[in-house]
Length: 272
Image 1 (cartoon, helix red, strand yellow):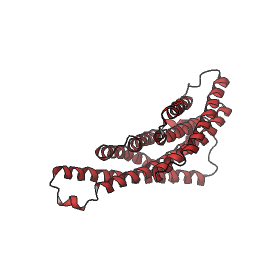
Image 2: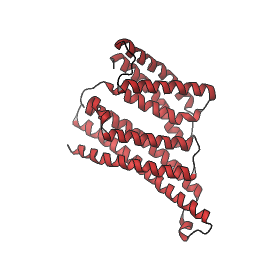
Image 3: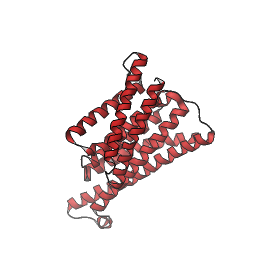
Image 4: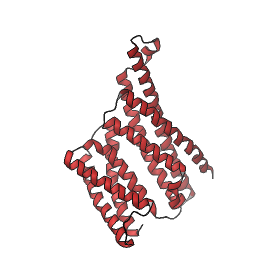
């Protein structure tokens, strides 16, 4: 990508990050007081994003969709345009919890099409990788708690329908308590996983240059994060509760186990 195009795209990513902050605060605290600020920054980011795409097209005299990073940038911009139109037309603020993180991460990855210099020191390299792994593992731990609570929810629901619950049923928390635990642990896990993906993609970009995107463990991490985001969206926007949410939570945890396995191998790099 052209140098100025990347600069404009990074400015857009910085503005989009307020949208990510809004989504995090909404999930953790269930408050949306930052939405207007985030929407304003999101709209301003779309302008810089558009300038980046135009700049790239003019410099290379072609439509900027010839490689992965350019295509991702274009897709993210189209998502932004569609979202802004939908919000203007229907005022669906709840979609922001899903759209804002998706656009920010997509644009952040799109800015990584140009190789950068190596790490300033081995200590910074190791510390950054450690932070990434810790964040991902904490996210998986929160998801494990969510999955356990979901399994208990399914068991308790089945016992209630049986009308003759076993003794173990009376030792379980109430369905409302389990549902609240699922919501809080799921939100915390998604926040941790999102920060882990951001830290990990940045580390891989510096470490592996433009070849980082083709690494299987990176692809697994993004795929797991994407499924996790869908779960959060269905929970917060579509109103999924009970059995549907519990079953999908267990499914997401299965994919997260693959991410953990991939990072178990990655953790060995700390010893190099």
